[in-house]
Length: 381
Ligand SMILES: Nc1ncnc2c1ncn2[C@@H]1O[C@H](COP(=O)(O)OP(=O)(O)O)[C@@H](O)[C@H]1O
Ligand SMILES: CC(=O)OP(=O)(O)O
Ligand SMILES: [Mg+2]
Image (cartoon, rainbow, N blue to C red; front, side, top):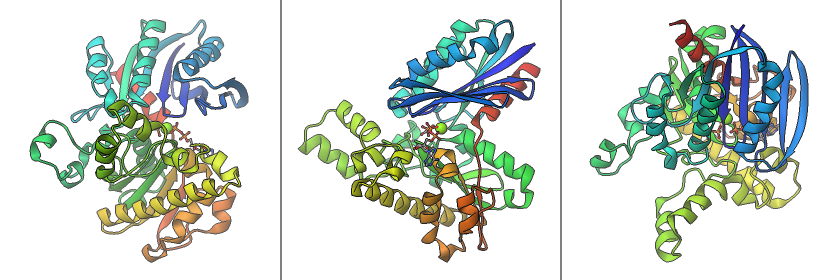
């Protein structure tokens, strides 16, 4: 009996699944990395939670491998699929992760420091643990390679574009899943103008027409666009000059500030975790949430403009799927676009939560199924 394992290292989580053919044998994640991390495991419908303390990605990977031991022992793992956040300017398809490819992908680590090193650490560990399995990388950036040039470039001298300073866009595996899901379940909507909001610890929005990405809020790095758990989102580049020149901050200090100390964490001074902020009575938590929903409605408007209108709005990712008040507050400003929520449906956690002209959907993303599909295709080729 041969199996496929998927590993998806996000900025606050390590998600995994084990498949036998098309069936999920077990799935789960280590969530709240660096904080009160816990291993959540779902095996044959039986759910368990194991507190781990403040582990990092390496600690999470060790815990996942240990938890999977009883599932994998005595069975052959034929393929391991990995989420790789940055694939560079040309990758449109999944790729086999050879020694050479891994080295090439390391060059993108500076543009996704919260992800790429951890994605590649998973690859190195999996190659060691499952030396006979094929290792396949699936790239967050691949879905966006259909961007038109205007969404791909910045207004900088052209030579920088030519050397790769572009808006790559991320969360592509999630957008891939959502668009394929819509094509199956809502074929008319799938052909029209849809804005997908992937709101996890990282967050981005994607403008999709007929299943293709035509715009996204994330950019050259996984910093641009929406404010995130600990990342700033869009800022005036003049702020970076100020930090460097006036305040004498080093590149490393600025990287730390923008990636690890900003966003919801920086604004609230409490946490980058949306659940914690929604539970907090502190005015700073409320202000951080106010900024988040303000920027969310602004970015939905921007993506609707990219599409020349909007027929569907999809919320997904840990926050998009689970935080009803965030969805509700972002939508209150968007009545002018025909977006209105059915408050009861939104609160009850239904899928179809719109009450206006624009369809509004709440979906659980499934990046793992996209990764497993790519591994299966490679094994059957
Ligand atoms: N029930 C919930 N209500 C509000 N926010 C939630 C809920 N469940 C998860 N979240 C938030 O989702 C975010 C994590 O999203 P996720 O997509 O799992 O992260 P990652 O970007 O690491 O993949 C965290 O901010 C977390 O607080
Ligand atoms: C690209 C990105 O920010 O991913 P995640 O939301 O999983 O951290
Ligand atoms: Mg994620």
